[in-house]
Length: 308
Image 1 (cartoon, helix red, strand yellow):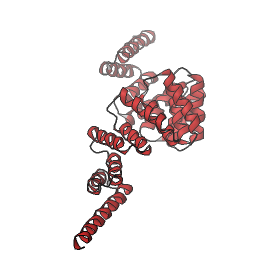
Image 2 (cartoon, helix red, strand yellow; image 1 turned 30 degrees about the vertical axis):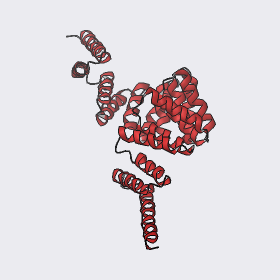
Image 3 (cartoon, rainbow, N blue to C red; image 1 turned 45 degrees about the vertical axis):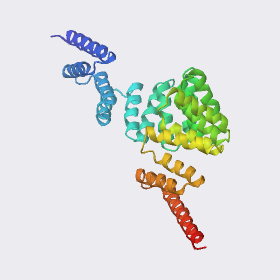
Image 4 (cartoon, one colour; image 1 turned 180 degrees about the horizontal axis):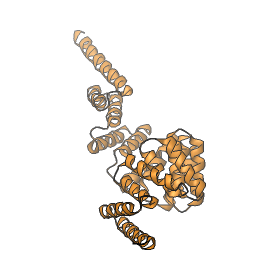
């Protein structure tokens, strides 16, 4: 077989593999990419797509090995760097994730997904100012997509820039009104600003969209507690525990409400559940001691009343 015919067969086989990959037929695609490599061992695109399949199936170390080989063959393809950056980020290797996403952006400055992943890795490294700059570039590039606004909001919130974070969350919700995480995170920032009624409305909206969110139930309980509506707060902590019986924060916060309502025995039981769920939960251990002290004081008070 001459070289032209061989190249044609490789191209046809790779095209077929791509079609199966796009249709979700990962097994067939994997076999065909391997067949390409059997004929053309330096076929960088097949190595890259085998790496993508490894990413899709949770084999991140293998993805790094395969895409790394593709990069060694052709370092000038931005998506090679972008996808290996995803693998590094998933494994918590954020320095390499930053390096490769920046390489992707040098090759393709308008690579929106690389800007997003770079921001995520920078947040994980604590480089919030750089992350904000990356997300701002993503927003400028993709202003009609809600995710860049949402991620920028998260980074701004972590930086204490709450008014700006609120604006970004609202921008995300204008583009996607059913964006549950944006409702929840907007509620959290509003609660931090003392805007408790608005925070409650955000949490309620998130729960209307998905009633099975224990952390949002806890957040709503906290906002109601801070408003002084302790009975309603306790109801939401209990709902969180119906969804996730091991939610240590819900046990602790329910216990705190019960203790404030002069129910130390019930509070003590809640604090016990909190430390059982999270043995290093310092606040719950402290509260457990407080509840025990209140119970002891009540017993001593009752004894004194009997002696009198």
